[in-house]
Length: 207
Length: 207
Image (cartoon, rainbow over the protein chains, first blue to last red):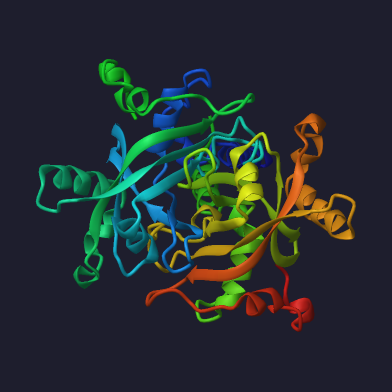
């Protein structure tokens, strides 16, 4: 039989391990300060891997239609802010976007695990909605190569998705940004502030 | 100094603890079989606590606009399938819904932790979009009492939200259901199949 002190050590280890932050949080770059709106928006876009694309539904007479999609705005640690998607017209979202390119893309901080005990609707648990126009990226273009690298690095499964489903690369051309990351209403950020964030920060930008 | 066997025990405990399912999954009712579409849709609505509401944006000239919101379709273990929301017109989503009640509400299985290593866009990682009309629930009605109990049980923080923000209770009257829970396209479920699911199953329905 083990000694009581040995069992105590084992229990202590168990308690310490259970108190560790979730692995998803452990390796994540720190959330920027709420006052740094462009940084927070870019952090949300870089850290999430999925969100909800909202389109004007052709099937439902012009009603708004939200759908869960995966995306990537760059390989891990080198994000550019533009969300790229890998969609098939077998799914209504791609068909909708081809018929009416007005689209919004919505992300939450909540699934990242960094909101702690805050409610998902609490303004300090950040939310980002990028609204603009969905565009198909020419599969033979250099941009498509970058997009594929970005998508497949975060979604390795995509590489093996059925060829006959004719997946295409789409991107959102951002025209309007809605960010809530604190009390007091949405933060005004222009698309250029968002897209240019970090360009002059060099190696300081690690997401 | 501890004996090597004692340290080995402590390490074994650490490894075993790390392999435990996440607490969020441990207490969750099992996901229904993919063939049971109505059950899967109701499970997604009961297990999630937040999703994305998509409206027709007044501020953005009729573009679709998705926003992160908290909701509840019943107290834990007694869900009814109708999502109730606690929204303020300080936020564009409530204003949009009052101007044009066409709304969709989108949920993903991914944040529940039950998709394992599957990609969030993989069809077997379930997605649900409820589309219909948003209605304000009269704050003095018996339905509002039920909705408040449902909301505050899953979102205790809401009780203390500022009175002068004039939060109101909204509900989605569901007209169309889009569920992907397996390969082969969306599952046809009618709103009545969805809402009546579990009514005759008595104590078998525990979500």
